Length: 150
Image (cartoon, rainbow, N blue to C red; front, side, top):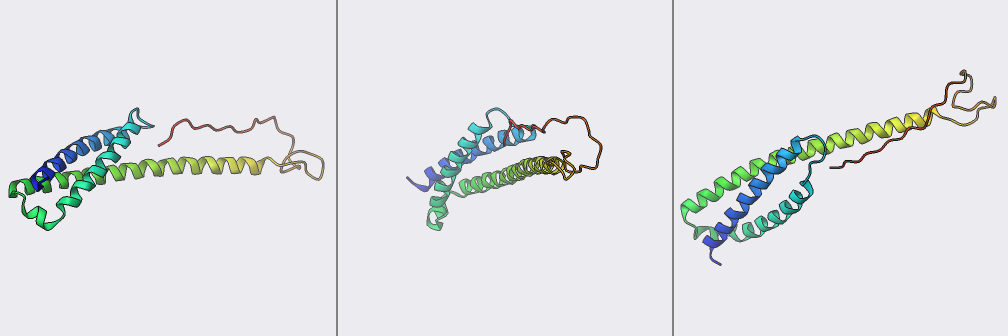
């Protein structure tokens, strides 16, 4: 395959990857886990591999020298736009992951506090961590469930 054909393939991959990243970025703006995000991630992975393979060929100075200047300009513009979308995507993914970590940290701390507050039998035979306090009403165990993931 000549460099022009590789450039066309690369531009095609960049175009598809750009559209995919725009869609994923829209879905990352929606709270929770959006439908179809898993498929987008799988397709993004495949397109990223194709992008890398084509770039390995065109990164060679000899191959790049064979490209027409307008094709090279178009490649640079497309790659620059893709880079900006990738940065935005990275930031949004990092924010989602950080929010998820914070939620799980809060849940873990709440569970630790609850566990520390509920003790066993004390020296006086009373049940609880502080047997000196008057008996309180029954408190059921804390139950926590999460049905969404990033």
